[in-house]
Image 1 (cartoon, rainbow, N blue to C red):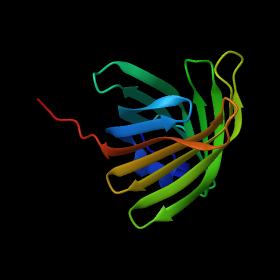
Image 2 (cartoon, rainbow, N blue to C red; image 1 turned 180 degrees about the vertical axis):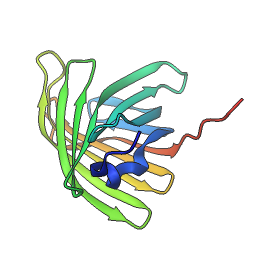
Image 3 (cartoon, rainbow, N blue to C red; image 1 turned 90 degrees about the vertical axis):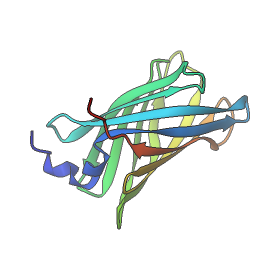
Length: 161
């Protein structure tokens, strides 16, 4: 399958990323987690995205799925859905670097009829070679935009048996 030309700017994301993260928010206790992100080329002008996290003991914590689109090579759109009933549309500029890119995505829309109230989100992706750093902030449950999550992920190269 040939990669859609509109995805050239984010082609380095394709694959699985895994690493450690830490979370905090004024309304909860701080915590650690393992995170795995997978970006898959499906032959269309977007990448399919799956995110999963686990506690240090291995218990599942969070998951979300969605699609990453590149608009004219300079902007990214991220469409996300969570099993809590929350959906999100985030957008931001894509800035190329020597060995990757940075992108800060601001939510244009966060919706739910049953999940906890989230008014706004901000996601930052920074790709540098085989290291993907993520940061996530949110304005939720009556609080202003506040840092919530950060992770440092490494490209997960499958081993053959």
